[in-house]
Image (cartoon, rainbow, N blue to C red; front, side):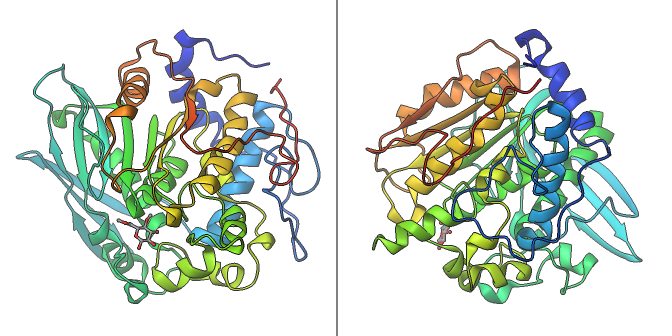
Length: 396
Ligand code: MCU
């Protein structure tokens, strides 16, 4: 097994996650998948050509396979870096000008600095705001995701700064557009030492619809060392397949077929699956969360709303966690589902768990983050005969 000893954790996160997991290599070709159909969550440890994923190098390829297919069939295309970018910093505002194909946009995240701690500060990017208590010593970077890609209704398709650059007919749904902007925020912070942010210690969070976006940003921006989706529901930590099943038992849960009518978080390419069968998808949202590994992730949930599909989230997140397990760092991925409370109002019962993740990933402290907890009366383990009938290797 590859073991990531604690002292080399951040060396690994910064070097391997940003480099080895991204490096182009000879990966298995993706088959055409015309007849793909799987009622269970697709096996994270088997390539679509049937070969097993047994090593960390294999995982880098499997990760590319998932990333490619999720962009193609669900999220839309994440564009490469734009032609050019100008960054300035004044009055706690990071002004990012972007030029692409002769068009330009400007967006301006604001930074709230902590009153304690030491510069350069660790930071959390707030996807449309932050709904967890601001941790001591951590800067909060407010990202106005609505301005980048609107998410008001189904009529928001193609609206926002991202689409001013890439065209209102871009395949991107709002979430991958936000992830693109988060990458530019990281680039901008790296170019701007006077902003006093430690770019090796930046996480992302958001709640509900913005929790969906936080998960996508964490999945697609490997410099983020901590991803905290909060009560993100369908399109976030939930599995499309399990949510469909829950709805079929009469429990009002958001599903793919509803979400494509409601809003524009996903690409129009997803409609064909949402409107026929999500079993045709060669991935599910356990695959999305698995893109975050081995970086830190803490999935926060609330048992109080059927619409959020808490069992769907639990099943998908426990399934995703197997990738961290295969890497020997299962405790870098936490799942916590609190009892009923008001949506996006963080309960104090989860505070010690959140603190443990913040301290480990934003401050490099040795905390216990081996957290898998649900207030729900259900269990889920991999292998699961119905949902995850696959076995978990130790990467060699
Ligand atoms: C959980 O996130 C969404 C949900 O997907 C929508 O169906 C609902 O309308 O709004 C939720 C939300 O963002 O609440 C703030």
